Image 1 (tube, rainbow, N blue to C red):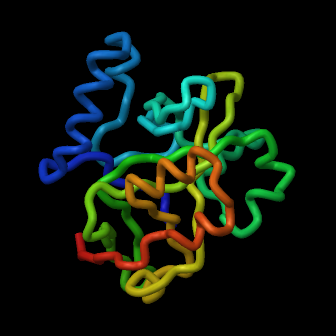
Image 2 (tube, helix red, strand yellow):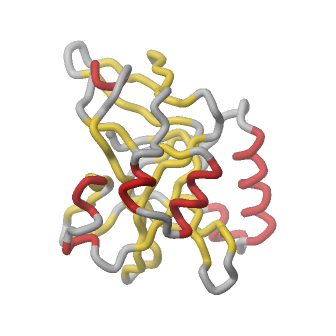
Length: 187
């Protein structure tokens, strides 16, 4: 998966509700730091996590990407992340979005991917680092139509599956629940 996604567009009322709730709950300075449209790595984002103490799904502010020295890791292979020492201590989370972007190589062309069911929820891992919570997006082998331009794609969930993912249901079974039907548009 490439390094950008679209958090909000005018067609998505559920995401608008998330933004309004975040504005009501967050301090003004923290709210203004959030990226709400085309999101780039190392920006502040809204993500969902499961609070086991309260037994409910909550919204949290995170930064996209784990630090590895001077390098920023924004994606993790879903097939190996669970057992990788680099991702140990991570917790499951999801990033709500309207879609994500990918580029073909020859010719260089930007594409937008989404699913029929809006919004989508990008499966991710998160952990606390020195500067706060950080997240990486989980990827899987690309299916159609994305495999025509890239070999990886993000793991996508419906809202119901995203809650089950965050609550800790079986890792491999949840990965197989990734949305198959994706829509590709030239940008």
